Image (tube, rainbow, N blue to C red; front, side, top):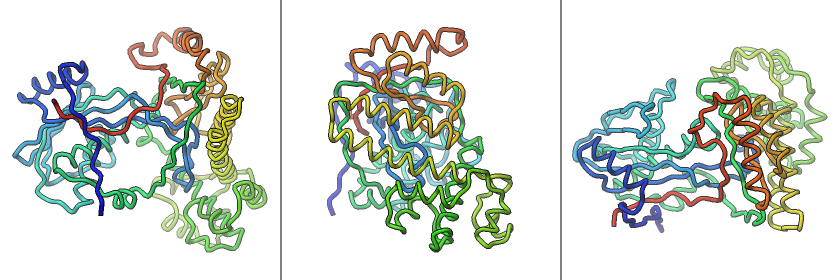
Length: 425
């Protein structure tokens, strides 16, 4: 079985200001120098929001912002973690007994997830310790996958320390994903704008309720079409079982579900189960007390958004003369659906989207989980300088002096490189 390790590059640390600074902080922190550095990028979801956990494809792009970790393996079994950001406190634990408190979204728990994931995947024990210093340029809680980048980076750190690789076959099994390259148009850039509203997914029930509403919608649609609804978990499974198009699924949704919210009692009546069975066998602990579920709206968003992703990909492939305009229209439709059908926007995001469109974006939408975080806009290259200046003035300066100016709030980005291991030359 062929194996493929992470990309490795030898660099002159003295010629790289960021690596050099990280090396100096590491030396002052641990009294030694790193043996290697690992990078993992953030990503922006250009289109395809809240449909991945329903079984549908999304269209993410790696960005230049990233997580970078300086690493020194040590002979003890102690894992010492530090962060260049003083808001994130140091953490020390035994590498042999990793305990992750899921109730507390502390920064080091994301590193521990990557570390423990590799440990469990290979069935390892008695892991070596390491000193790690983490540096990140991805705005936290912004929808640019800072936490995912940290988990991936930690997993790659662990693999590198152990001198191990993940086989291609195992990697696909570990993350059952099929990736297809999409060539983005050359006449436009994507601009990220941070609303500066942070939404902590781990501390809110919004996200958990949406996931459950999608599951309940799938079960009611399956029941309506006489499928084995108790075996269905995702909206994508309903479409696959019926063998119909996304457009047909939208029509079925219109027939099967009503726009008015469903009570738990109505769900039980349709499925022919008791309230106790609903709560113990279907609902998650954090959704058992929810009083109403908007099933029609969530299903409509998922099926229409999945169709928009396919149209976005097809438009990129066909590359008509008005490709940027067409892609922008799909992004605009996506935001409307996220706002009205999935209800995962917020006033600041809506305002920021409107401002971006006003000043030259062909399309603009929220990106990430929503309820705060960032927007992504597609902007013609020739409009970029005026777009950045106008949006900065309209959103970040006018009456918004409280927004932290030191945060990277507005920036154009291009597809970034993937994960990488750096060795000092």
